[in-house]
Amino acid sequence: MSDCNSIGLIWEDPNTRSKMIVGELKKQDGYTFNYTGEYETARDLGWEMLRPFPEVRVYHSKRLFPVFASRLPDRRRRDIKNILAEYGMKEYDAYELLKRSGARLPIDTYEFAEIILVDDKEIDNRFYISGMRYNAKCQGKDCHCLSDINDGDELILKRVYNNDFDKYATGIYRKNGEMLGFVPAYYTQAITHKMEIGMKYNCQIDRFNCNGKCGECVRVRLRMTR
Image (tube, rainbow, N blue to C red):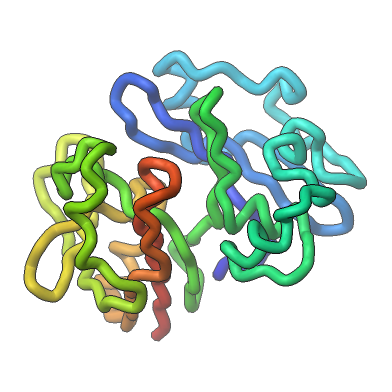
């Protein structure tokens, strides 16, 4: 976990499906948002700044910015307790729900994720495996081909060299050697560094749900300590 309470705004290039951090949202005496990370690279690829944040500067708000809050389910929904339970929450906390759920919408190419820093002394993150539909050969349709995956299954991380899209590419494998997919590219540099300096890790299937959104069928939990 990062020392500061911050999460990254992730943009997915619709052409290459590569993902990059373009902004950072923090909760500390209110909320702040600013463009950061790879926003310049994303801009060169056609990404445009969010309308509520037209300039490269730090924005402040006492409440969660409406453009982000609107991505979350209404706290008055009848099934809100079930939604919160899905993400391990007992009470409604908009910022925490944003971080845990990713707040993906079918109408755009954004999501949120907790930031992992290279100098973090330990991490405890949950994220969805990237590239599942290709490695599982399901193409988002034949979810039954993943039926032997179970919550709690131990996973192995391995560096994947000569990857054209991510020089720090890290594959996620089952104990039998089968590759499930990749660690999201916006995490790989930090995770590669931690593995190279000898940090220990534990990676497990945190949740398998073949009836949910495609691309969110396998969530893992990764813990790393010195």
